[in-house]
View 1 (cartoon, rainbow, N blue to C red):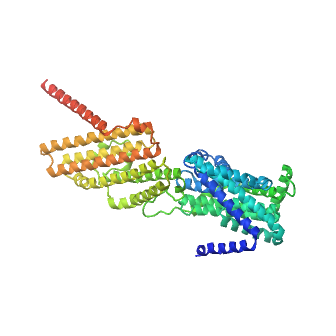
View 2: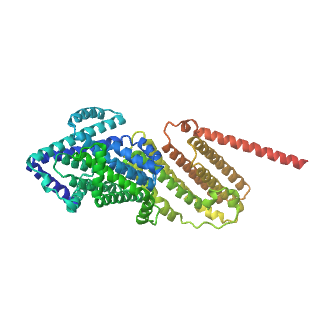
View 3: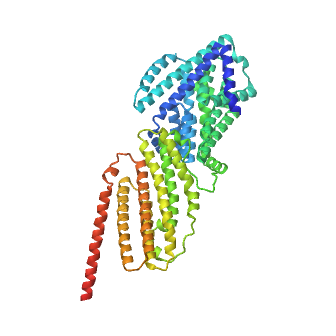
Length: 619
């Protein structure tokens, strides 16, 4: 309800301010240009988030010091802790980062955001920054008109910097003009009251602007124009630091529990750092004076001293909180528990991951593998095999020959509990991700759509197969039992091979999948010959033969779908022009020819065996 009236209220207040003062109009325009410039810079850096940034993040966060350094460096370059926070939440939601690694990045980002204060205080207020803005805008727009994605990314960054500089210029001019008409320092509040009041104002300003960087620029320009006191500026800086957590919290709304925990860690860090800065404000002020004197900063250069203060209390916060990251992780995992629904749910998908195509792709690959793990168990139970037997070295032929109890399985219920919701979420996610995908990543998303469809196709084939399998495993006819046990072994061996391929290179995997296809073709021919012999010798009834032929086809369908699913997963993770897929994969004619050769060889061996037996008998 409040959100409905917020925009009209803000519009009325701004309109009144514009009518009341031309200086206020310049300041507001400066803030708007600054925020738009930051938006443009974020757009530019997103052009480089299609893989390079993500790969760097994976390599640069395997140690705590690397996580801290990555957060510091990327935020310094991007001048946007918000973008770094959103990227980190996306990675955590997709299972590509641990919570401890994500917390390290967030801590480093808090240090990185302090560099903005140094840039504005040391450069923005001391030169005519608007002189640099116009050339940046010109070159930026030229690059925006190019077709190459990376060049457009540079264009967005240059345009963003241009508007950023213009915003600082207008804010600086507005506050200087304000000084001729009204002295805002008359509203300064000293002591504890001023400290708490201006901290609250800093939080509110950052929440409204969704950017601590924008709030800091506003504070520094007002301080440089003499419109706020140094003491109140320190409180505003503390408030802006606490208020920036709202961006991470908003970014985690549609994230999974991992993203919410990271947002919680961000909130705990910034609030704890703010409280320490408030409690020890006198000590911080003395430390800033000492450090400023050591660095040659003039005693009355309050803008640079504010930058020193902002860096100092964030550094102290990192030093205080870093040793407790382990305990913070344990606390957040205890407070923000993952709800366990009745049905298995997606673990890696989130709206936050959709912001970055490469992260969305990796999240979907992980979720498709999650779907297959569940399908693996359902398929194994569907043919009355235990998952533990399949992934072990147990001889499946001997195992199925042993008398055993049928696995109690309600196929439809287990599908609803372990497959349906994940499959539906994957299809919905890939549909939305493809809408934002680049030409390069489009085929990968299409492959993942196919992989999910093939998993479900395999499950449905096994469901049809199970009906007769359960019936004939309890039959008194040993011949039909033997043939259905052979189908069980056939499917179990395929699942075992696919399980063994999960960590193999693409070249090995594609060769192995061709082997599976050839064996499946050869097994199908074996069933047809076996049916002919069993009917001819009156060992099974025509009804049994019909069922066996149909169920052999279902088994082949399930195997083909499982192989196609595995190939699609590899296709999503490998470039389309990967030689392993082009040079090593066999076409259908080659597969059939290889299967025929195997059958001919088996027939020759069989005939030779019979001849040897006859020869031995004659002797």
